[in-house]
Length: 417
Image 1 (cartoon, rainbow, N blue to C red):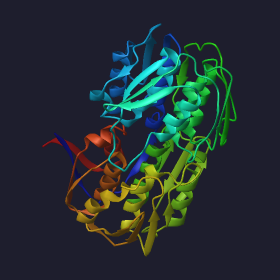
Image 2: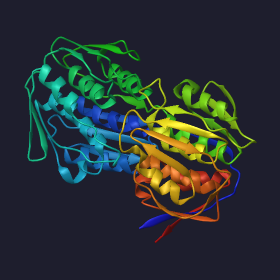
Image 3: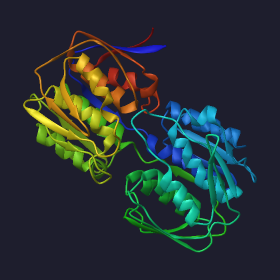
Image 4: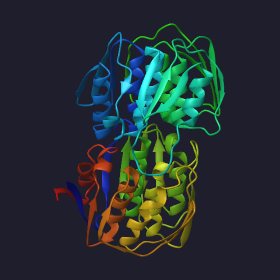
């Protein structure tokens, strides 16, 4: 088992190019199932979840080749339609094969997924949408069993702008008969990315980037080569890291509008933020001010940056209230943050953080991808040594995490424990 050993107190500085987004590439890999033949994705991050998704696609009959930042997926004329539990349990994003499998095969047997332990993320909206499109969907023995030889377009209004449900509907609808309208659709940059790839494949989609998406079914799609959108959450993590350590960092490859609200929050905390094109520069030379955060679907504040901002507030001046509106168990990691000396109290979906001048190193355990990142950031400013366990979570979402921080000047090592 690997752990991260951190010696706190270093100021971070330098430049970094952000790789492709975890929250996009896995869905794009699933979308290749919609077209027989060879599709290629570029700007692919070297993360554990990509490896898991590649193996899942292989078991569905695809030939998958991963070389550097490129991944090629050769989809057979008749892919298998069963996604087994031993892989699905490792990664919740594997549910994204549900839509393309029922569209291509007329059936999909997908194990109910696992993934991060941050609260319930039900599949009710996925199931209800597919039923409206004519599918029979049942949950039996830990599997979602869906069947429909020809899906039919439907008017679907989501109770919540769910990213996962929006993706399932999109991939099911692109070859369905007639028109599908998604009301209250998710608007995240990763949703735009999958829509753009589907259009490149021949899909007819309008309203991309808005809360109302219209899909007119086409008879077939063709394989493509597509560049994965850069990871705004990785960029945001590095931005918070440099603000916490009072450093200077230039981030390349991410449009500032994908991080508009987090960057505003960092400016409120005292950081200097300059951006242009796909370059963002963050400078901080004072102790940060504590800042309130309320997580909401895009363009609101991303839940995937909430733990990092709690870490920032833990060393800030004053106090702040962080409200989590998406995942009820995401505050679980604050118990570990408290081991480093942070003053955090939780009440339901609110966390009150009273900033302290310093933290002290201690052993802590990552409980999910973003919680792990937040704990590492706290360790970077803690006095003494911090050991982070459970780093396999971090590897699922960050490519070259340790090496990138080392390049910024951090004293962090991956060691076998």
